[in-house]
Length: 209
Length: 209
Image 1: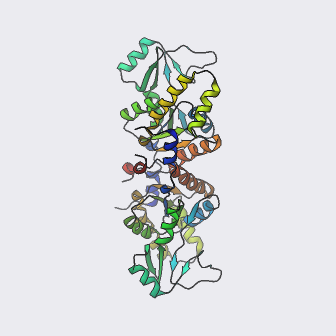
Image 2 (image 1 turned 90 degrees about the vertical axis):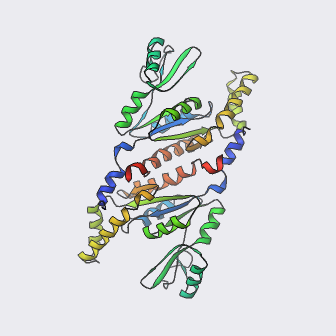
Image 3 (image 1 turned 60 degrees about the vertical axis):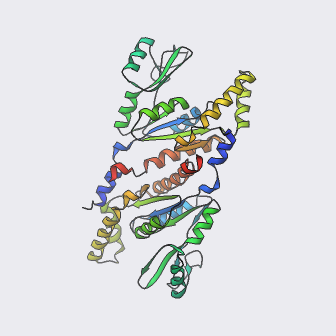
């Protein structure tokens, strides 16, 4: 049976096709800046907010910067499988609550998740539905070194360690769908916007048949 | 062995990853207009020029509108497998020369191919390398009818036949990668530009590993 044109259009635009957009990459590549600027020009996209057990810093807003909670509650949520990914740094937990992401996607809204490369690996293992993975890179190793050195907060050894970590993270690139090289920020933001827009025009094989 | 950041960047940007961008869809959906407007804002993209045996019309330019040739030459080229796709309408041949497409892609330039749905099927069967397939749709059946009726050059029977053909062509949608609904032309052009831009940021699995 052939569908009418209108039935095809309706199927292509069905809201069930929202995507989880994972933006990851080495620390220092500027993924946070790209995501924040892109969000200002994107409609119907939600930014996933992480949960943490670390105390709020001045100016941080509950539900915007983070969802703040205590250790006991966080560990209960872990046991209930409530996180897409989580990790512990310096004695505090950080994680991505699954419920928020699910609800937004079910309402037909794309969700952006800006996370570390290790967190992205966890998401990849736990997530079966539509996921778009973007890897953000610095323009060069020289540039990244200059950024890290420019901060003047880290020893040469710490910087060498960071660069080694970046190299390991880059080995994950083949698992991603897209890359963005953050040379000129406006270009990088335009890349991000193009990827989100193009993904919305994708013909999702599973639902079109 | 881990590659350096710079080696990863170089691999991601390697010119061997240019794409053949096939833009197809029903006649009357406006694919030609979208492609022409998009080309004005795209760099490093070539538009494939068809070859035909029909005589040039006033104003048509050799190598821009078409490559013009005679039947004998066209048939020799068919025998040599020189076309990505070809068809015969009203006693004349129309085809897409393979050499132009190959040379542009090898030079690292994306190539846009604006062709009929049947031609796109031939390309799909003959082409192994990177291909991005975009299907352009009218905003609705009512709209398409209005456009066809507006031309006032066709009988009701001819219009009914065209709509039946469109329905058949729409059944090919699952073979495509992206769709564009040509409701507002500027939006449709922006969709096209986003797709081309996003495709350039794609991590091509075969070459990254």
